[in-house]
Image 1 (cartoon, helix red, strand yellow):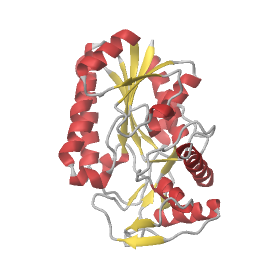
Image 2: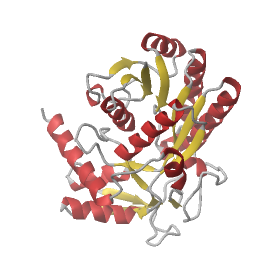
Image 3: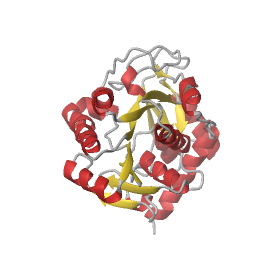
Image 4: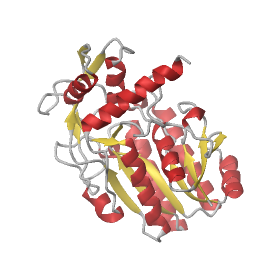
Length: 329
């Protein structure tokens, strides 16, 4: 039996593939390599280059590899880009997810883990956001993910597809063993961008908005380390295999850092100063979003191991240095 990981050659998906392999699981990855990298996967993971929205391909992979669970990461994830290209986001994140869910149902897959987002909550106050908070996404990205949550809920009721929806907050850091990290050169993750700037790969970093109702005026976010996030998926898989019910859970630490605070940590950990440009707000960015994260601990027994911003930044810097070496080989 195998676990199918969509988007498994990307940032978070590759960490899930590593976690599965570390646990002795058989792993098959589907990725179109539009933003992922085949070298990010160890040879033990079987890579199928293709589109997760191709039902014939998904059906064949499910049959040939006897897939018993799907971890669905493949998605477009840039909020401002979703505002400029909403139809592209609905096609990739919603329409293709529908095809994947249908293929799972037709193939007899009974367990599904979905990579959702805190963007489904929309604009919220500075208090931690619980899973029962009303959902009001303010970007096509958030809406595209919420639509997939709804489809999973309906498929669960109609077809018995048990699932865990994990709503990520801001993912950061890299594999502590140095095996994977955020590798997309033009990625928009704050800690990656700041690390690249600290190492001289970008001329400066922009801070979008300094007039938010937060302590220093910049956006406030909850940063979760990527290996801890992969472990949350492993705990979700164990829950489903033990016959557990469908769940929707936040993935975060329950503590927020502002953009300016993160930049200061990157400067300190790297030992390098760099230019910071203050720019207007971007459309679709909420002022603050921090997880109320007790439910995932209670329901899955999840215990994060890397909840330290200095450590997360150090991992990101180490990964950027390794990429510089790789790119010069």
